[in-house]
Structures are given as C-alpha cells and as structure tokens.
Length: 70
Image (cartoon, rainbow, N blue to C red; front, side, top):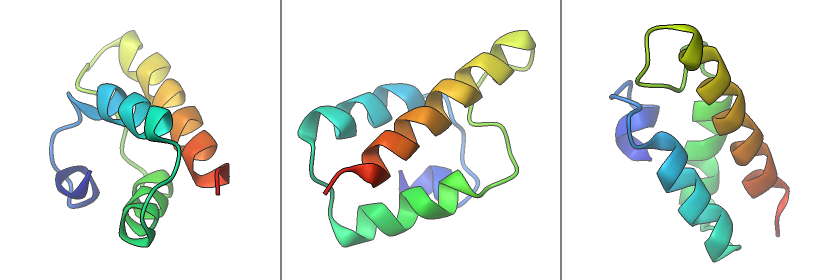
C-alpha cells in the first residue's frame, strides 16, 4: 500500500485491500498508510473510464471497513 500512498499506480489496490480485510488486524503503520490513501483526492483505480468511479468507491469502502476493525 505504500506505493499507492506515495502516488503510485492503483491497479493492485482492490485485491490488496481485500487481502487486508481477510487478515482482519492491521499494523499501526498500515493503518496510517490507509488513512493517508483514504483522504487522497485521486481515484483509487487503474481504469480511466466509468469503471474508475466504481472501483474507487469499492476501494474506499474497503478502506473504511479495514480502518473500522480493531
């Protein structure tokens, strides 16, 4: 997730977020990175069409779920 927080490509984003959600507990460092990604203005998607909006919404929802976990 660090490359994404640093402005990198988002093509792996949703798969990585789903894996983190399955793990259940994230480290403080990961939580910090996800918080930074969550407030980012950029679309969290590798797509550049209508799918970008849909994937961005899914990614942000997954981040919210992860950050809500203990």
